[in-house]
Length: 346
Image (cartoon, rainbow, N blue to C red; front, side, top):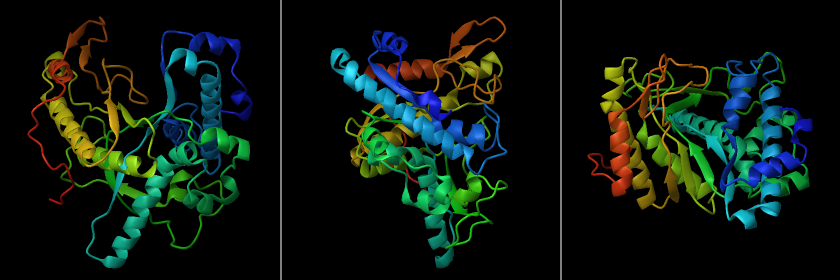
């Protein structure tokens, strides 16, 4: 997104805000668009030849656009509608990679914190604190755009709730290119991942799903909820706007009898319940997704839905998880077989 695209909203947008919808999300997963689209180039617009600067410019302009949209809504529509507006951020939790070496563990802890800053903090810090994380400023130098004082003022507090998308988590350790005390070079051969300086990896014992990047790690969502509540203190709490899983359910029979999806929900929601009991302010949960659909970069090859879709006929069939989810909502809970959702080494 170019800076010229972040001009004040037009009368067309007024028509949108005058609609019956009262709960608004300005942007969904700006990190994904910035990095996957402008560092890795696997999402639109498919660019990666200026991966040392373009992701940060994109993220910067997205944040400014978000703050301006929120400003217009709050000035002209919020009181009339009685609604709320915010932004949804994607995040994986990072645990320090396991090691018996105290010096290595110290570096792994720093890597986990650095990774959280480069993923969650990149967008959450400006929205809730008014500026980028210091670690990003230090490592990027003048490659990281700066906000004016007016932009900082508009950004800080520009989300009425914390919209959170989470699916998976991982270990973290310093990448091979990371040098403690040294900052990454300003080079077009470098990218976001050189700047982050982290290698993320999974434990072999973690259950994989049909999406190669998604492992069953319910403790990660619990940790994220605790971290966000403590670090950002969102005034209207956290709304988990996406959480779900895909499984090898290409046939209709496989798709409908989705026992593993139900088990995924039970584990993750049990973790959220524990987080709430431990002080996290979580006020809502939405699964991804209602229907099997066309996934970013995955097309029709992976299915996240509660409803199985025949892509040839578009016939729709409720999966077992849809009935489970309905009953859970109707009863405002379920009897969980999972307690003490936390990470333990196998």
